[in-house]
Image (cartoon, rainbow, N blue to C red; front, side, top):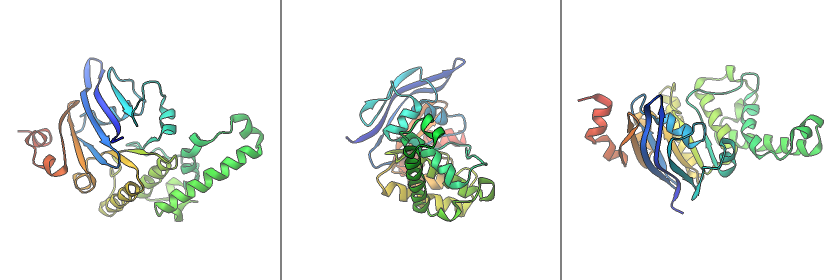
Length: 252
């Protein structure tokens, strides 16, 4: 199977305005693909449709060869799709390790009653969650902050913690929504290395990003959206020299 996800003719309107207008593309297995475009182009709306947070008006999406139509958002995580968000969503009352462990809950087989009674079965899965979460923190080279709380760590580390939480469910496809937003140059360089390390583990990646230097240095291919439509797709070198892309970003 060459395609890990295929987006076909997706359309979504809000109040009569098409936020996503007949957009189609696919991500190959083992590919890093970037989704770029000016603000308001419809990129995050499309992410929300892919992850079932929004309902599409028309079109279809298949993941690993199967339609996602019947699945809920949390069920997609079980299938191997995970994501981060533009706005960091860490819980300040939990430390870093505990925040990452939240991403493991989808693998927990114990129910609420087990947790309430602190049954051995639940304790077993809690230990698995902790072990797996610590492994991911170590993989991302941030295990030194496992006991710190979100308000005690720099912004760049918060981004990495959110990525760790997405990785703990062991995704086959990782969707990153503007992971470099708010990062300085050194933090962005660290993020670039992190993306490659994740990709080297066999994870396909689809990312939304405004940092063109990051996009051009990490992506195998790029999709460009403007006003809800796909206006270009191709390797970074093609996108950099595409006249329609230049018009979308810089005007005539």
